[in-house]
Amino acid sequence: MLQSSAEYVLNEIGEVPDVTIVLGSGLSKLASEVENVKRIPYTKIPGFLKSTAPGHAGELISGKINDKKVLLMSGRFHTYEGYSSSEVAYPIRVFKKMGINRLILTNASGGIRTSFEPGELVFISDVINFSFRNPLIGPNDESQGPRFPDMSNSLSKSWTQKANRAIEEKFGNPLKTGVYVSVLGPSYETPAEIRMFRKLGADMIGMSTVHEVIVANHTKMDVIGISCITNMAAGILDQPLSEKEVLEAGKRVSERFISIVKTVVEKTC
Image 1 (cartoon, rainbow, N blue to C red):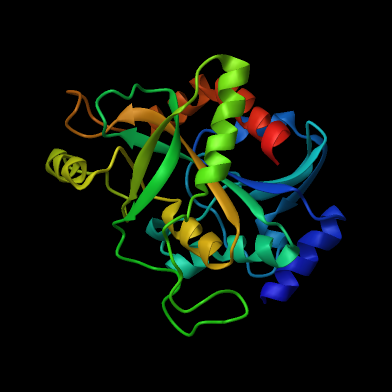
Image 2 (spheres, one colour):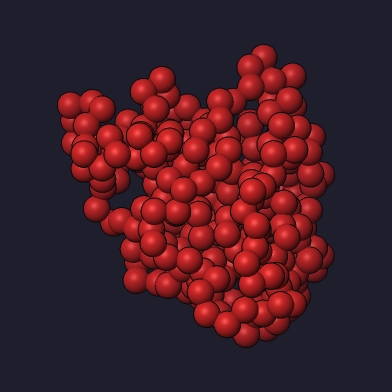
């Protein structure tokens, strides 16, 4: 199935992209910046699932950003939708099979570090997998990666630093960095859980990304991650959390997000 998926997408877009970008909740407006657009609904791609999360379109978008060939994943899969962690990360294996070696993961997250503010963009320096799921469970295909992959540099430190230097040169200030913890969901975390995660070293929290990081690392892709702090996590502010708040925050920060990602693609891919 993996070969069929990769061949189908390559036949549709015609050439191997320089980079794939996975778009998080509320961050899909980047697609409007792509030139020479080709859209491929997930329903037409062999092996792809249906994206049911709010704010996730469910299509691949190919084209160019600043003369770089890009492939956007507009709508990711989550374990809370009922999918396994290996199914959630299946598109990453497809991208690698296509010959793509660079991956930019983006997401919406709740801020645990109190110095973060809603609307802030943060580079992911490392991850904590608190979903208690791993996409590598089961028989290992040695042609894709080792049985026990090292996770010391699962998000490329060198690429992150290069990208942040480009951002600082253009906008005057680099992005902050932080550790992202992923939970199973779909319920939001309790204030007690957030206090625990802070003690564990987490700076932001969400329900995605980590399984994609694991598989990308397994297949030797270069990966960086950008998280949009859409709200402060439970218990930090005296207000309830909602999906509407997450999507609205993504829209508010969309222009800055677009500028940041376009700079990273132009200067480092």
